[in-house]
Image (tube, rainbow, N blue to C red; front, top):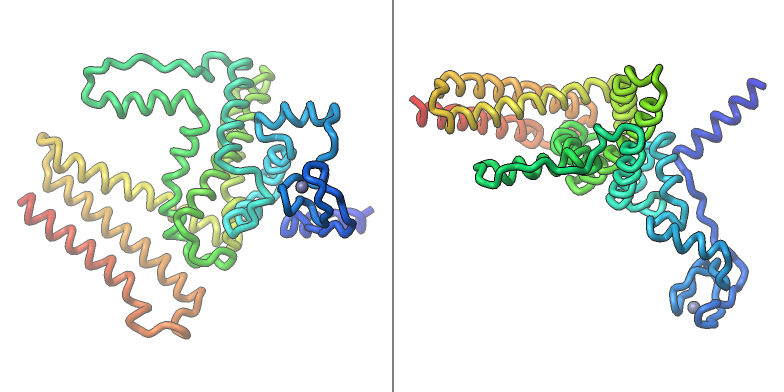
Length: 340
Ligand SMILES: [Zn+2]
């Protein structure tokens, strides 16, 4: 019994890292479309799949599913992978193994629609696609309109929210052991997958809302699940330990808070005249300094982890934090000259 469990656990581990084992079909096949005799899964002349035969009832079913891009059944399988090996799936996709996943942006839109349909059926007030009317004379008309639209399209709102993680992730996880120097486009797809995951968890939320006993705790369970999955995603994707992932996640959170302070402070210091500009600027400056210290801490950990002194010159090791400090000092000096 115990050894069986162990076998099961080992095969699950193996599957998590290598889910697909591609094999070349050896036998020859005559193409149903152009008649070319060939080996392999696709005809080299016309491109038709070797498994396509004459039209059957199964083709009718497949033809309808094709509207949703579900004919190859990879959407449910991708959803399953996002619940059981999420970080590995993201790693596979962004490093070039695209066949293992359903196209992510398309999947987000399809899931958004499914969540809307199911949610509207269970909880019509919450999942509505009606856009509230906004007066067109308003100076912030387009911004307000965009937010009203986003509010009614949960899938885009989720992606919009998580896209704020692209830059902090890029800064904090650049030297990750499993994904060295990832790019911003890769960062975009990471967050798209996370948004898809949130949509899948929304389906669970809807199911919990169906039951009156779990209705009240449904959204807290949902938030907990999202946070736990974020941690699993980042651990499997970047390959740090649990603690390494947790403290880096927390420092990302601080980066976002600092960014809100700096951007919000700058806007209020320069646009709203009632605010005492110099005092506001003091807050910005303090935040900038705190951000630099955080950046320095992460930088030092990365230098130690990657043993940078073995490959880099002294100047190359100290360059980035010195440039960052110079920028902080320059902004502070400029601000005081303008405001005082
Ligand atoms: Zn052919």
